[in-house]
Length: 309
Ligand code: KMH
Ligand code: ZN
Image (cartoon, rainbow, N blue to C red; front, side, top):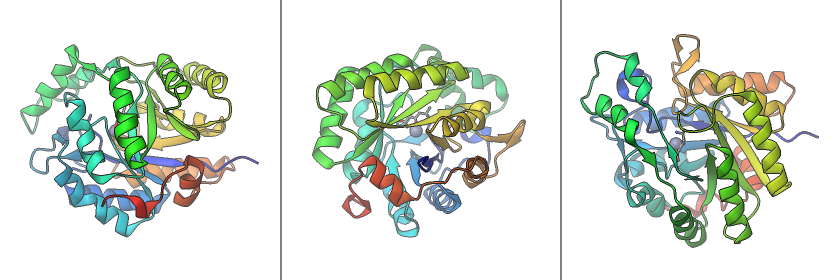
């Protein structure tokens, strides 16, 4: 019997900027409303970053997170996943601050360092709402998204061991699976763990379907049946890669963090629109969508009542 498909929705992220889409949620109220609607549409995990309500710039400030996390928790059952990726350019301490304060059921953990190039997005707009937007994108020509073994171990210990938070392990390339295998061998990552394979970030592995089949088969060799896996692809490959993952027995991630569009040249009006689309696809394939409690059970999460918000 095939397992149900866990839909994660990453509602705002720290990559896209306000000029790129008027539908990108910025304020705590917008982030809460988009998250609750995505959960109602079928997302069982909501992956969250925070933004400065005035400028839309990614912020690590736990006080901003605390303006939307309790609202989401009180209005839906979805698993809340607090990003430790934050915004490009933040220190690891800044990136971890909100998760250490809020002790969520789940947090992202980036499984290796990469060049993280989002500067090609500069070509899409001539005018920007805020000065920080083009500066932020341009900075990534010379930017390494640093996630060293020390950083990963620190996060596993301080957030995982200390607070019982479990992780969405973000793997942007094949080598990141081997980084995880090192920590599995050390006993710092225990099954069932959740691997998020990421395709199409400039600096990471490209969005070629062969890369997914290869990464999946290497993950099986390294980890056997002890892991759950999910796929996100940046930009226009989002839905086709999510579909391929569902067909191969994996889970899926959608949301405006990863892609602002719903079809060619057509901006998504909301996160829920993308969740509904992948849900339709999954159900048309004859598969079921996982409930939040099914996701909790499969990923070994501590429970909604064990968080710090
Ligand atoms: N923006 C995605 C490509 C994180 O939040 O830790 C990766 C991500 C990172 O979701
Ligand atoms: Zn993220």
